[in-house]
Length: 129
Image (tube, rainbow, N blue to C red; front, side, top):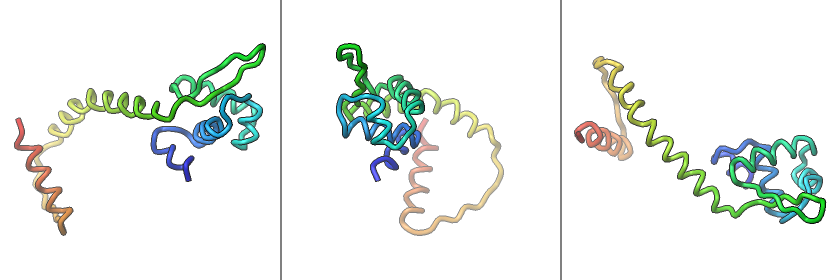
């Protein structure tokens, strides 16, 4: 299901439901989103706010009414790129902690082609300066 797939990109269940509803409906009110997403209206307002902060929902003013509109789905690429940048900045610290854990002797057992690939990739990672 589409909503479950969106959970893999860091959205909560309610955020995914609200985003999918907004995609289906186009520019619409929070009430319509709440009905389509089957989420209570007060919860929709807070969820829309978090989605706005993530760049997945925009607001259009039509007269005195606010209409909420889902941004283009390619916005997820920007989210993933941002997560990748943050991870790349964090990786050296994680690697230094990994190296400090000690050199205890261990026997590891690898099986099959995937095991062989894993050993090869580990060796390449450790040999690189």
